[in-house]
Image (cartoon, rainbow, N blue to C red; front, side):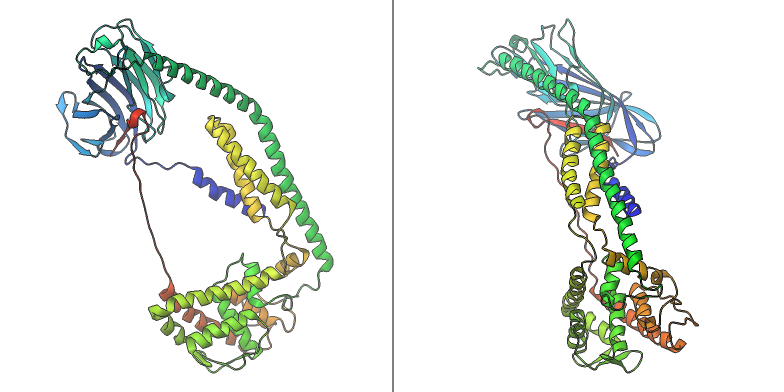
Length: 545
């Protein structure tokens, strides 16, 4: 159980590893954006992007999502005074400049028409030059806003990544030194000046300055409350992690103790080393139980051969079989008869080639799959009726409860950017999910059956008692791992084992050919895109190609 638990946890951890989405491997070393506000309300923007590429590249991309009510025009690009070619796809601009393993600086320029909003008491530039749709990190980001002339700053602040990064100069220039900016984050900036600084812009007849100040106060209060919550959760995290770890240890410990108790009980009930559980359950149910709930066409082959051994089916040749008797108490054998002889053979004689001939016809393929599925379901019902596992235990219910708790804490720690604590809770969440889904301990009977059948999965049949040789061989056939060799004492003669092995090979071949006609594969992909998450739908991002 421990090995399987670790294996599942490692597999599921892959889901939490972020995938690289950039077309090429690159680093945006530095981005400097200058927004020069004009008296008519337009904004002339120049951007300098320094990229380091670590492989062949064709250029850079810049997505410019305009804020509602604005328009971006006259986008140009140059490097060291040389103009570069640009192609536009929706709001994304591809700047062509190819190379290999080098650092380059690309300068962009464009105009945001009506970027400044003018009111009776103030004018604001409230904008997002990037938003959460951005897929690249900025190692060093700065945004500078300059008024058309020296002016007093009425208000200036940033949100999210830009919060408390502003520096106000005497001439009214405001610089937001954000430093490192993660991909997938917002960073709205807001700068307000007296309305008369923009005499040529169209003005609204409403006031806004008090609203800006109130929103700044609300932002400060929200950030302060969040920081208080971060501190509280940070101080609580060690205790919560300790309690969660104790619950995990308790579940794992009691699981191991229970397993040891079942083993001891099994030892007291054990009857003979050569015992093969022919009377405990049907052959396909035994295969289902010991093969982790998997049934392939090899299990159908084994079940059919078992009916031949019992005399319900007579073998006429290596490829032709006759149904002798429909009398059976096993529901899965009734389904096998209906499927193979009534549906496929349409009579009492089944030839191996009938399987492929039937499955070749498109109208039969879905019926073939459904019949096979129904046979597997009947076998599963038999297995479940035997109660070889304890399905409902306090450990599973506890694990389910702890799954909810640990996932909730994972979300909380993630929301407050407590990354180490979140990572620990992710591991615990995976543990509890896997434990609650997979902890179905064997009963003493189930463990005994598993122990007694384990050698026959990979070993020879030398230790099988008299009368159990054929069922044990058919069990191996059901796994597709026949280990019989000449001289095994489990059979009255080598021909007895060879007979079943030849029939198994022929039947497996027939089922495989039929499966090739009924196999269905499908693949689909989808993608979505949307507007910016910045202020007024604005934003954007950077990348390379």
